[in-house]
Each structure stands twice: as C-alpha cells, then as structure tokens.
Image (tube, rainbow, N blue to C red; front, top):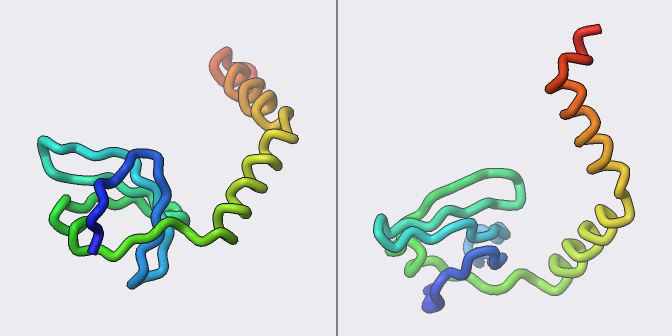
Length: 97
C-alpha cells in the first residue's frame, strides 16, 4: 500500500505492474493525481487508488539510464537549436516556398 504522499516530478515504480511513472500533478480539491508512464501513456487516478497501490522508488538501473539520457541530451545542443529554427520558419511562412 502506498503510505506516502505522491510528490510532483517524482518517479515511482508500481510493484504489481512493474511500470515506472512520474507524478505530474496532485489536485487535492478533486482528489486526483495525474501520471505519466514511461511508455508515454497519461493517466489520472484518484487518491484512493493511490493509497491502494504498492509503489517504490525506481530501481538503481533505471535511475542510471535516466541520468545518461539527460547527459546525452545536454551534449546535443543543436537539437534544440534546430527545433527553434524550424518553428520560427514555420511562423513566418517560409515553409511554403
């Protein structure tokens, strides 16, 4: 049982399904939690469902892989520059020629 309070931007691993997810938001007024699973799926669960889940911090191997992915992205500054250039061209209509 999840006895902890879900923390925003924290990653967890559900023991039953062995799926890793990140908590995107916690709406205490509506009593719901927005989740983002590693496979891209977005989900919204109730705080009651959270209390029934068995969650643990993700494994050390997962944490190392996530750190490496962030480092790889930091070593590719041209990726964000290219995205910005493509978006700015689109906004000015240059893609039509």
